[in-house]
Image 1 (spheres, rainbow, N blue to C red):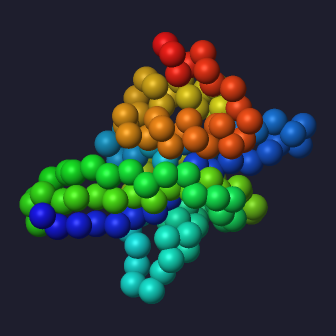
Image 2: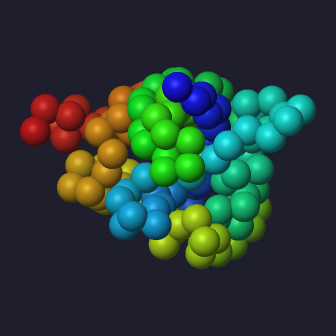
Length: 149
């Protein structure tokens, strides 16, 4: 089985009135997701995450801390079964304007934590839930009601 290593992040920013907003993307399959991409030779996981976030969304950021590494399998018509490893980080946005990389993602938006959680629950990948939970805990966002429903 082929192996693929990627990195990405839960990106957040603070508004002028100090509210937190979470970046959510809609991928090319129209599923709610988080920005991520393949590691290039010589990059650290943190460098990969920041480069991919910038390439996919136009946002620069800084890594606050690691969140979680998830694993899953998928099928690639060119190479067959692939074991995917994705390293996620909590990333604070520092500059840039949202611009989706159209060949990779469909849309990108800043959302309230509540709206981002609802969108993830409705149309997101199951393996991103624990990543978001960890990010929300670190940011002091209470989503206990949402986790139990």
